[in-house]
Image 1 (cartoon, each protein chain N blue to C red):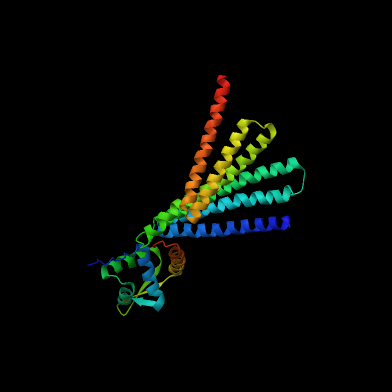
Image 2: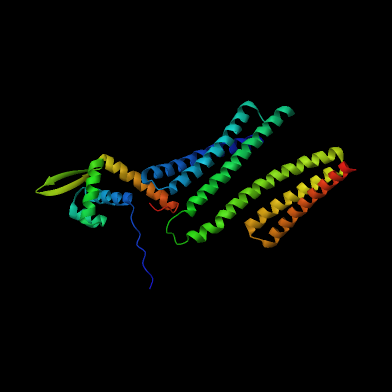
Length: 95
Length: 213
């Protein structure tokens, strides 16, 4: 039986996926990001803390629920990543 | 007509240089963002192509501005010399650039056709570039040797001329053989090179005999 190879996402790709998920809805809850970015709760928390430290996202609390939104810096990062991803794809470079 | 062609060439050189710089710069941004070393190959490969074209473009522009293509022979001789050097720099940088980009492709991870696509490409790039380069160089040597032979009509000069002609044929045939993957032509190229080497040997033997005599 052939073993199915699972492609591992790079850290930068995971960050881009999280940002992309937030951009799609504007204000995103953790549960939404979890499914959209396909991450475990612990890993997502680590990444969200990293993104907050880097100033790529903002966090606010509404009715005891944490809501995340993207900053201008985050949008710029996502735009740059998508450009590079497109370039890399053309050359067959995995990002 | 010549002037139009020259201007077109110069324009295309500068345009291509800008394009390659842009591609190289984008690859550099990819390197900066992702820290993936594979981008380094694409950055350096395209930047070398850019530098090669830039060198050539600068020489073309300088010649166009300061040495118009009409003039006395000594002036034209200098122009052609500068052109030859610029061309050489351009070809070397282009060849190395292609090679580095090919290496970048070879280092791609987890691609189904990786080995299939890169294994024949690397030697092909190396061989075609160097064979084309060597063909041009040996052609220059043939012309120089022919000029010497026409001047002195010596048997030694004739041997050298014949040897260089065979060397040139060898490189040109190799290039055709690599591009067309023609085995027989490749064998003919090899034979031509060996005969050329034997002619050099005969020349050496003649020289040594004369010295001994």
